[in-house]
Length: 357
Ligand SMILES: [Zn+2]
Image (cartoon, rainbow, N blue to C red; front, side):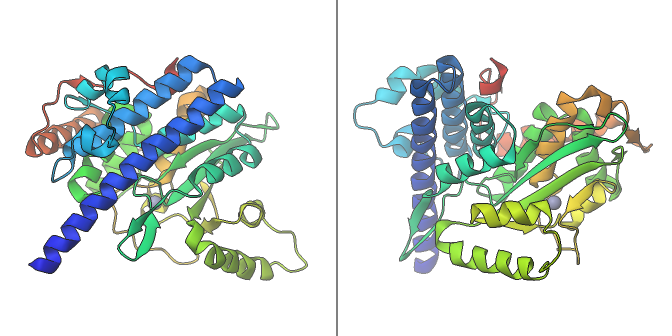
């Protein structure tokens, strides 16, 4: 019992420290980008509000519940005075996406390009020291995703390729809380075809959609500072296999940036999106103990579809007994039930979104 209580209180401390660090770190990078003139101050403010809201919302659905004052530990109430609307909404409104996805999105906005050579180093330098004490050791900030990916579509006929779209795995603590976030993404955020793919995979273990050929996706595990040597070793081992041959791009990226290690898609994503060209290609299927929709691939593919109608028109959709809207609505029912179970007074979806300005 004693050990259990000690574990619980450690878990709570890690939650509070991670939440506090994430908010302040995100604010630092957004405020300095606005001061440098790299980001419109109104957009910077909207991203700050969005991230602050999600973290405070996570506190509300955490068990035990964590109030904003505990998360922010501010004696002068500066943030609560400045963002009183955000504080109020954290008790009644749900966010649209996890905090790391917003941060990733803000970074793409700040560097003003979708090229991996600019986005990835900026992201990695931001999260470089986002670690918190865990007893006698340190661990990753729980809101920093473990996997990121990028996808793009190259159209052979038009001899062009789309820019990159980035995604991150869902970063969230707790099984019910994770379900809440996946259901929010499915019902409120993702492109309908991606939500549909997730629902069909859950229900039938089959794929709902097929992308046109030449949609490519590469994913990476993000290693923390403390795991850097291990990351370098893994990348060096993979590089050794290509001695004398052309090194594939995903491996070049990993060796360039240090804390990224290429990662094949899990069996669930491979099943949901069967004709995507994944890099690296899975040698053996990693057993997925997570729910469909947890992975980085869904977010980036959703962005790709939202930005390129010509890909949406070329999707092939399979037929199933239960209709698309019924399955997606069932996700919303589960979402509302889970919110109710956690005694969250659900009134709506938050109105601010950094990239919507
Ligand atoms: Zn996956």
